[in-house]
Length: 75
Image (cartoon, rainbow, N blue to C red; front, side, top):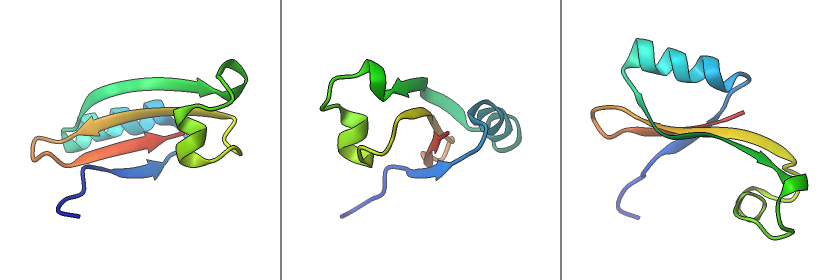
């Protein structure tokens, strides 16, 4: 491995986390927020393939700072 593209962080309130990182730390939203509901997906889907079948619902967003530091929030 030569670099880490982003880190993931579990947050209780996705919208509040985005607002805080934008206003306080200067991050910007790159993608999302997205909502995932396993009951509306195919049996094999990227979210469950990556995170496991125990994930039933999820919201996430990707943010980046000016210095190219990336973070993914998972609610």
